[in-house]
Image 1 (spheres, rainbow, N blue to C red):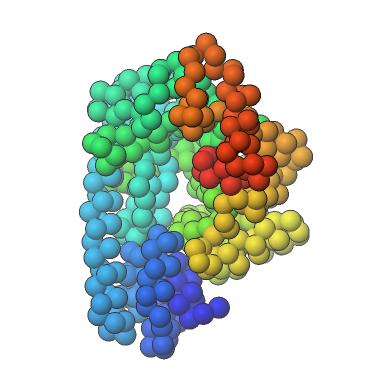
Image 2: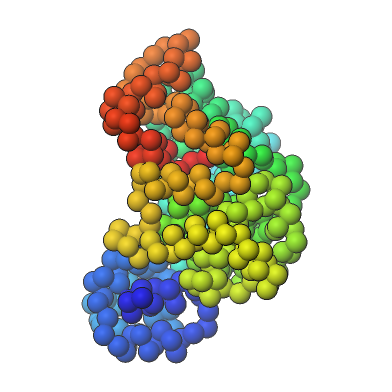
Length: 392
């Protein structure tokens, strides 16, 4: 592994290894490549923090200034979005809507030494399906509107399948990703709504306490999120490493929850990558179980090899689709997920063929036809995964 990649790996690990980072800083480094790759992985603020700890004088002035500028900008953005999240939570809870905020500012304040170390853009919140209409109404009173201009009846049908909706305000300055499920309906994977709400844990965000997924649930869901994006980002691994390092994890509960949701293989991939790439420490028995999962090991090796490719990550297309499918444990789930990608209508289908609401079922036939006409028989993953962002 080239020295620049080693530097990013050590910085993302959040371990007290300033000596290793210092030694890399004192050697020859291609800072253009290192900073470009750090930006692609969402690591510029974290690299700045770790380089400062190790001895900033060893880094070139221009590189350090770029890192410092990104850190300052991200700090301001983090504070702004954290305040916006607290405002949204207060509004929803006052309106009687129970909500679980996750990722974004929640992880930044909860598991990192400084909230500016984690880059994020959207505010992710989970509500119960019965509260979606009320949540939309309350968010609308705060100026949030659906990102895509789709007639209401059609929009509702799209949302039913995806179980999420992006709302935006101020010309896209703030986006709220409203979820009422953690994966699309077509995946067939089970949910654990009552368990998630029962196990919520209070964490500090900008001086306030908010209730998010418990640490065990957070770990499982972060591994799911990583697989959805084919583990293309060191930032996602940094989240897992920081979460494990900062929480007293009940590993029996982690494994039981992953098994209930049929996400054990995805958990094994995430744990393996976190240990191999970042040197994350997990109990020996947990690591042994992950190592015994041959398919998880092969997937982790594939993702690890692609982390420092140019561009990083497994390319969208047939390879990424196979990665997603192989990460699923049951043939039935793989078939449902694949058929969902082929037939579940998306915003792109509406833009290509604007049908009235009463003809919505026609989209299930029009979607595969449209994809084949546009991309030929090779459309399978390049279009579906690219359009849907790897959603479940």
